Structures are given as C-alpha cells and as structure tokens.
Figure (cartoon, rainbow, N blue to C red):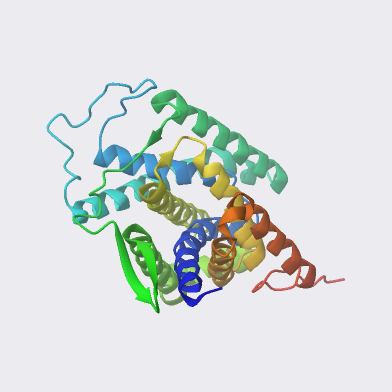
Length: 324
C-alpha cells in the first residue's frame, strides 16, 4: 500500500473509530453499573440526531405527523453560526440523555426493584427501543434528512495535501468529528477518574451494596449513569448525522450492533477498552479495499472473532475469577 493511501485510510479509520468509541462508552457505563446491555441505546443514538436536526432546521417536509410543521417560522435561532450549532448539538445530546433516564425509570427500575433476572431487563430495553424507533417513524417518516451544509460554518468541504506525488483528501467534517470525540473522551476520562461523581460511580460499579453502606445513593448514580450514557449516544448520533445524514429511524440499529462489537472487543465494562475497541474496529473497516467495501462489516466482526479466540475477555478486559 502506498504511503498516501495508508495515511488516507488511517485518517478515515480514526474519524469513524472515535465515534464508535463515544457510542460504545454509553453501553459500557450502563454495563459496568447494572451488568446488563441496554439495547435501547441505539434508539437514543437516533433520537440525538433528530433532536439536533429539529433545533437547527425545525421542520420535516417529507412525511409523518409532523409534515409541514415549521417550529421556527422566522428561522431557527441555532442556525447560521458554528457556535450556535455546537450549542444545539449539546442540547440535543442532553435531551437524548433525559430520554435515557426515562427509559431507565420505565424499563430497568421496575425490573430491578422486583429482583428480576437481568435477561428480562435486556428484553424490556429491546421492546422500548422498538417503540421509540416506530414512534420516530410515525412522527417524521423514514426519509433521510441532511443537516445544512454550513452547520460547522464557512469551512472548506475537504482538505488536501500531498504525500510524495499523491494527494490525500480528507473531509473537514471528519476532522471536526475526530476533534470533538477526543475532547469528549478527555472530559469523560477526567469526570470518571478525578471527580467525586466519578469516584462514586466507580464505587457503585464495584459493589452497589458496599457503596450504599458508605452513604452513596445508588439509585441517584444509576440515573446519572443513564444520563451520561444517553448524552454520549445522542452526541454520537449528531456527529454521524452531520457526516452522512440522518438516515431514517433505524439508522441507529447498525451503530448499535457495532457498539456491542466494540465493547466486547475492548472488554465488557472497561472504559479504556471501549475507546481502544472503537478505534480498532474503525481502522479495520477503513483498511478494507474499496472493491470489497460491501464486506467491511464482515471484516470487523471477523477481527472480533479472531481476537476473542485468543483473548476471550477482550483487549483490556479482566478475566472473571470463579470463587468456589
């Protein structure tokens, strides 16, 4: 492979891999606290993109019950400026976080209070995901909605530079996505590792009973966990939406499956593992030759299968010790 193509694939892989990492962290946070997979996370991912699109554009012209409704007749207050778009993105992610909290109250807390098998909570979250996705389709239809081309301001659509005699081209939106992802990962790492909230979350994840005896409100920190999970999922949805469009209510399903692969590859419950797993799968997809691009998902999952054969606990996961 020529150096220019190598660099092109590397940049592409880091951009999409960083989004996978942010999305997978939402799975990891919930799993580390409750020990279950939240299948509604993909629906929250989708909602985040739609929330931000609604704030920025304010209308859905094609189909659904909201067809023809214009929320901002005089123009959206969040359009026309990259800083306002950033604010809309954060608000959309926060709304997605609140939906995740609502899902916890409806689908997880009743099961937890009754001491139900974790598998039942997983099935419950899957049912909630289907309800949310179908509700989105009822409201706005199944068409693709694209963010305004100037959402990030008046920037060049792509940047190009020479490597030898070859030209490497990367979309500006990919660089923005990668930068935003790095900032969010750094902030989350600081919150989890250095703040009192993060220490309390780690205590709850380690042993909820002991954390409760130490005066930590386990129920409150479970809500915080779901909000953070939903916020990260909604943010990832908006980032993907700005790059590829909001591809219908079900476009979070594919990323939901990819997120599961990421957390398994990195190690269930491991935050650094989710980051590493996301980058590994993103790079694996980017290096699939263009003539075989239809099979890039298969390549990513094949890589997952091979690594798990060698290291079943994942790249950074801890082996489970069975006490007898």
